[in-house]
Length: 271
Image (cartoon, rainbow, N blue to C red):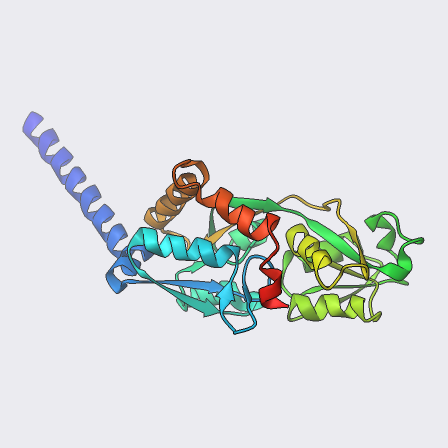
C-alpha cells in the first residue's frame, strides 16, 4: 500500500512539475527573454507619460519606465505606437507584450486583461474655458445641456465625462491635444483628463487661458496591462515595481517622478 501511495505521489509531483514547465515555456516573460526584445504598446501624446519631442523622439515617464524594465530583463526595447482605443486588442493579438500607457485599472478592462500592481495613482480633473470663470465654481455645475465637454476617445476621461455630466454634450477626439484645443479655441466649455496632464498643460499652452478645476473627480490607479493566464510575467512585474519603488540605492521611481512631474523643463522639448 505504501509503495502504491509513494508511486502516486511521485506521479503527481512529476505531473505538476511538467505543468509548471509548460506554463513557463508559454509565458510572455520567457518569450521576451528568448526573443531578446521587450515590445511595449503605448499611445504617444499623453503628457508626461508618453509623447514626442520636436525631433519626433519618444520621451516621457512611461518611456523611461519601459527602458529600465528592458534593461532589467537584459533585452532590447521596442516601442509599438498604438491608438489607445485599440490598445487592448493590440495586446490580445500579440502585437506587443505589455501595455505601459498610463492605463487606469477598471473592472471592464480587467475582464479582458490582467493588471500589475499600480505604479502611480491619478484622478480625473477638468480644464475650463476662462469665459466661464464666474459661472462655474465646481465641476458638478457642468452637468447641464448647455455645456459641451471634450475628452480623448477610449480613455478614462471619456468614461468619467459621460458618467458625471450626463446632461452635457460630450465630444470625443483621437488625441488629448485635439480635445483640449476645442476648449482653447472656444468651441467647447471643458476638457476632462488625468490631473498630471491637465496640471502640466496649465504650465504651458493653457496658462492664463484656461482654469484648472483641480479637485479630482475619481481615484485611478495606473498599471501595466498583460494577457491573462501568465503568472510568471505578473510575478516578475510586481517584483520589478517593488524594487523601483522601495530600493533607496536605485531610487528609480522618485527620480522619474521628479523628472517628469515636478520639473517641467522638458516642456521646452515638446512645445
